[in-house]
Length: 147
Image (cartoon, rainbow, N blue to C red):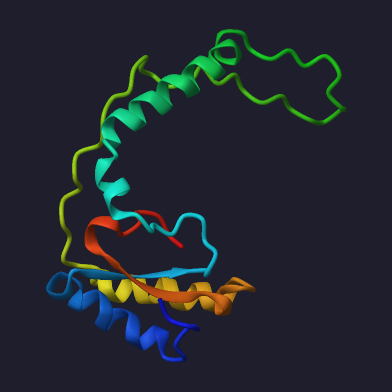
């Protein structure tokens, strides 16, 4: 992990992404005390994502089912405020599994270019983005969510 964010991170990012397959590490922006930064790679390898997602879905469904069964009643809405439509919940009762992989497209920006634009936009719009650090994370442990 870097001690501070490199000044040339926007130019550096695509080069790190391009070399990721050869080096086995991916760039990742994080704060030094980021609780989501993965330290123990054995713990990551031990997670069975499909079963974790299925259990999370079942818990969420159990918690939300009463709200889905009965529409909310709106007795005291202020004038001019329309009620929210009833949400019947997901159209399935059990975890449907992960979606199929999307078809690759070659007519847009390359992933390296697109991710560099995201980093650049983050630095322009997020007030604390410049306090991030650059980490190089082994491929198997690279987070699947934006920083």
